[in-house]
Length: 246
Image 1 (tube, rainbow, N blue to C red):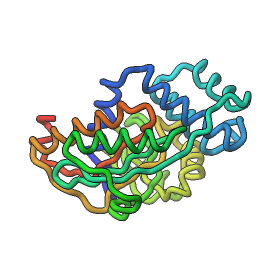
Image 2: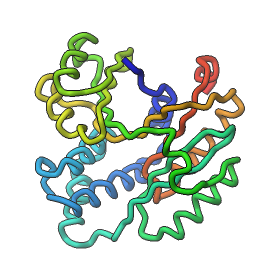
Image 3: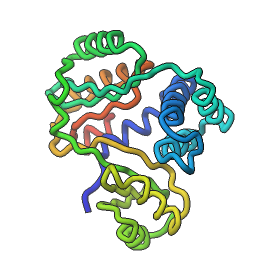
Image 4: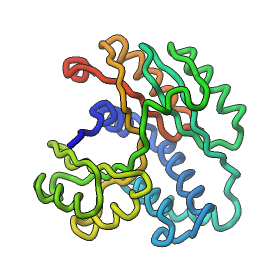
């Protein structure tokens, strides 16, 4: 079955190692608050909130912080955030999707346009690169969840599309609209997952050498520093040697 993005893997690990905890928790809290404000404050009755809480727990966010973010939505203290998707190109023509939550779209657009330009890219119009990606649900289980065949059978039963197993664990992909039910079905057979979230998966990729990959990583890291930015996805592909160097 189709594999997950190794580049995304590298970015995910590096982000965990490098991110300032307060900034990471701030982004997670924002998603929890928005999810709670849009639906039921009970995670069991609100699929989006349930996934947001799961992602927060996967990043070791304290329970107190999670509960505070939910209470903020219930108390009417939450800012009026707008969810916006930005699209553009990075060094070497790599397509990039940036998902943001902002209370000032002019500020966010200006900051992102400046960052793209400064780091060798350019911010495009909505739809300029989205056709190179597809929206998918991605569920991660640790290797301890079972062997490859056991997880594969459980994933098929749950209605998933793809599975890849490697030394880090099991990566399960499903249609974006099926993330909630597939995640719940997998939990019934395999136990709680490490992570369950919506991702952008590239349908086509652009290969970069080490220099290009380093420039792209610098751009991505700068974009992720922006308080309004929630996720950054690129359709980059590199050789094993470049990955090792990164």
